[in-house]
Structure formats: C-alpha cells, structure tokens
Image 1: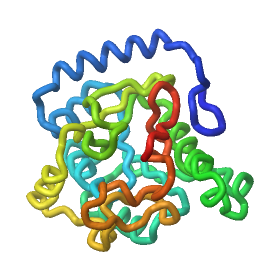
Image 2: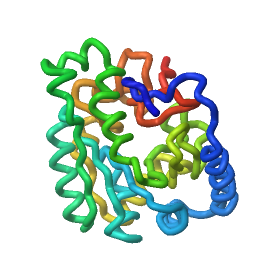
Image 3: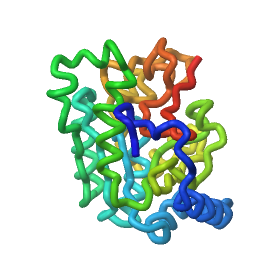
Image 4: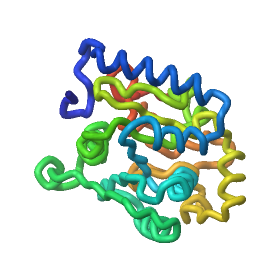
Length: 253
C-alpha cells in the first residue's frame, strides 16, 4: 500500500472504501460541527469503530491524553519511539502515562534500523527517509487493524493544516483520522492545561513549543512560528505520518 518512503503510489485510484469513509467523515463533521473537542473525542471512541490515539508526548499532547484518560483509560495510545527523541520526552512519557492512569500504552519502534541506518547517518543525509524509517512506516504497521486514529493537529499550526476538519479520510488506508483540537487556538490549549493542572513538557520552558526528534528540533525565538524549530531551514513541515492526496506533506517556506 505504501512505498519505502511511506507514500501511497502516485495515481492509485480512490477505492470504494475511501468513498464510503468520505461519506462517513462528512456525516460525522456535520453531526459534531458545533460540539466541543471532548464531545468529538468521545464520539470518535464510541461511534467510529476501533480507534487509537497516536501521541508524540510532545508540547501539547497531554490535552488529548487527559481527555482519553477521562473518557476511557483503556483507549489504545500509540507512541512511536524513533530512538532519536529527547531524553526529556521519554521521561515525560513515563510520568504522564502514570499520572493519568493510561492503561493501554503501546510503544512501537522500527525493527530494521540496524539494517537500513546502521550508522545513524540518515538524519543528516535524507531527513525524509529517516522519518519514514523511524516513524511513518512503523506507525502505519501499528495502525493496521484500526478503523481510525486520533491526532493532535490544529489549524493554526501550519499552512497545510489551515482547512482541517474534525474527521477526514486517510488516503489509501481505509482509516479515518480524527482531529478533536482542529479549531483550538494556542490559548485554548493553555487554558485546558491550566484548568486541569496538567504537567508541561520540560522543554517548553526552554523555548521548544513544538517537539520532535532531537536532531531536527531547535528552540524557537520570540515572534517566530511555533513550528519554526522543526526541520529549520528545510523545505519540510511534516514528518510524513500525515499525507495529502497520497503524498507526504512537503510544503515549506
């Protein structure tokens, strides 16, 4: 279904399953159009089939993790350990999981890194291939068997996300993607974290409003876009787990 870069082959026709899912997504968006993020999350977990929450345990991840824990602590939570994450992220993942009582955490890793990137050089020579090897392809494998997955994407985060809906079809996979926080602004995220006394990722206080793998994440200066520190200087806005028209998003400045 996906090639070695994690892409759907170009020109692959839209399947009947995708058409069916598109109709389902449209109906769900109409149903939840004026509902809260919590209602979208609850509706997805109860009415959209077998759903997983995919979390990076990054700067804002604790919001959805808290919602999931309140709705159903047995919600499958998929965490991709790329083996290039900040130590702070790994510690934060453990602390948040224990504090929220998440009882169905699934930590996944690529099983062929030693073969395909034995010296860890891909992060310097081909960042797209590195993302595909360590994150995109392992996640696609982990999500097989699920009807959909929940993401923390928001419209304000990047130009590629400006028209984001609550429910959308993931091209070529037969799955839905659910974005409960699509319409949230940064102040909504902060307010939810404050009201529920949720722990912050320790790197946020050090100037990292968006956190990925250590080699490709840098601090953000005042006035910069929150995601400016991700793949700084590269024509890249996404790691590749999110696709548009079957291709990994590459749009950048």
